[in-house]
Length: 203
Image 1 (spheres, rainbow, N blue to C red):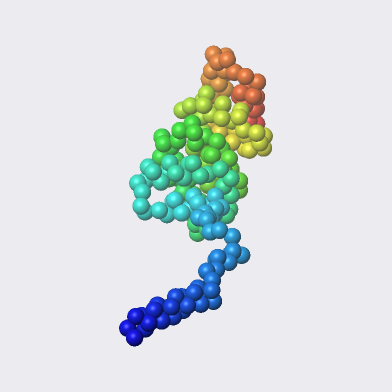
Image 2 (image 1 turned 60 degrees about the vertical axis):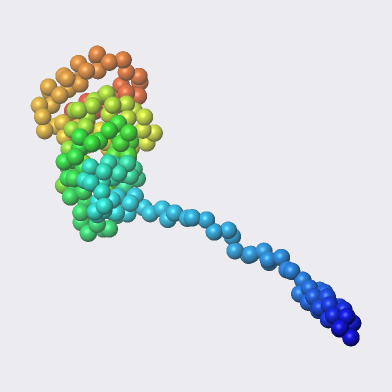
């Protein structure tokens, strides 16, 4: 009786396994209707980006200013003033105080940030652009010549002229003409100088 019982039990076990496998076939996972998840970065406005840097406490002032300078392009200062609860002037004063950190790679970003400047903020921006022009005339002229938007170019030129207008304008123009005569400038650069002299003549 021992051997038949073992054979019977073995047969029953095999039948049970076969039945279980056939009644529960492995199913491939159903394709998800959701798109694959990827890391998505939310791009805030320029004003939001710059204000978050201005308020940031996890970096040195130098790093903060450098990062802000790189993010200025497309700034709307009215929006910034609203978001920052009126800190436009303070922000521009910070950039002016640390203007020695402004490098040629920041020029375009800075020059593309003139929208809705007014009052004291416009004067502070003019001081930054004017001091920069005095420090690096060739670099600023080249950067302005490279701007594709003529309205923005003229806006920056007007700001520079406004700042230079606090000096002896006759002497400033003479220095510009002398500088220009010692440089080999292309036509866009010559146009920048001509526009600047015209702005100095018509403050």
